[in-house]
Amino acid sequence: MQNHQLDSAGSASDQAIEWLARLRADDVTPQETADFAIWLAASQENQQAFDNAAEIWQLTARMPVQSVTLKPRKMHRYGSLLPLATAASVLFAAFMMVLQLATPSFATGKGEQRRVVLADGSIAFMNTASKIQVHYSADERRIVLQQGEVWFDVARNAQRPFTVDGRYADAKAVGTAFSVRETPGFTRVTVTEGAVVLLSDNGQQSPHLGPGDESTVSATATDYQQVDPEIVLSWQRGQLVYNDVRLDALLKDLNRYLPKTMTINDQHLEGLRVSAVLNLDDQEAMLEALSRTLPIRWKSLSDTLIIVTSST
Image (cartoon, rainbow, N blue to C red; front, side, top):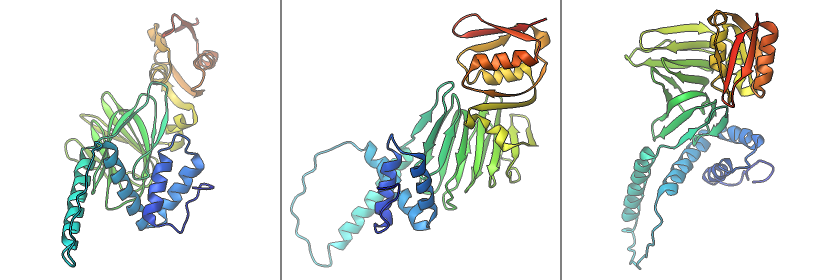
C-alpha cells in the first residue's frame, strides 16, 4: 500500500485482504481509515469482499496450527469437481460456525477513550469505562454493550442489520451514526445521523429516531427529547458541556472520567444549577472554574478523593 491507496488493478478480494491487514496495524493513520471508508462505499463487491476477508481472518486467528500431510491422489477427469465443491461447502460451513462462536471484545479504562474499526468497517468510538462484545454472523451484526458509552458509525449493509444490545433496549440500524449509553437504571440512545429503531425488553418498537432524537429507556418508562448531538458527543473532543444541570449530577458525571472521586459534603450545594464547558485534561482546572462561578471550594484529601464544600 502506497500513499494510503491500493493498487486498483488488484481484485476486490486482494484489496480487501490488504485493507484488513492495514486496519489492524498499530500505526494505521486517520487518512488511511478515511481512504478505507471511501473504498468500502465504492461498491457492493468491495463490501462483500471485505466481509469475506474478515470472516476468514477471524477463523484463521483462532484455528490451532496442525501438521498436515497430503497424499498423492489420482484425479479423474470430470469427477474431480464434485469433491472440490463438497470440500468448499464444508469449509464454508466451518467458517460460519467458528465466526458465530467468535466474540471479540473491546474495553476502555476510566478516563480512556478508544476508536475501534470493526470487521465490517463500522467505527466504534468508546468513551470512558466502556466494554462491548462483537457478535458478527452471515446475516446480522450484533454488539452487546456491557457498560459505558459508545458512538457507532455504521457501515451500510441492508442484508446484515446492525443492532446494539443494551440492558433495557436494543438499537437497530442499517447505515447510520448513533451513541448508546448504558448506566444502572437506564439505556440511552442518541442519533446523530440516519435513523434508529428501539426495541424494548417488553417487545415494543419505537418510531424511527432521527438526527437529534434521544430516547432514555428504563424498566418502567421510555422518554424522548431533542438534543444537540454536538453537545452529547463533546467528550470526543476532550470536553464536557453542561447546560443548566444540578451540581451533584455534574460531579457524578465527571466522576466517570477523572482519577479523583469528587463528593459533596454539604447538601445545600447539591441542587445548585450549573452551565459550563469543561476540559477533561485537567481536573483541578475544572474545579477552579466551577469555584469562580459557584459558592464552593474544594480540598484534595488523598490521591483518590476530593471534598467539595461551601465557600460561605
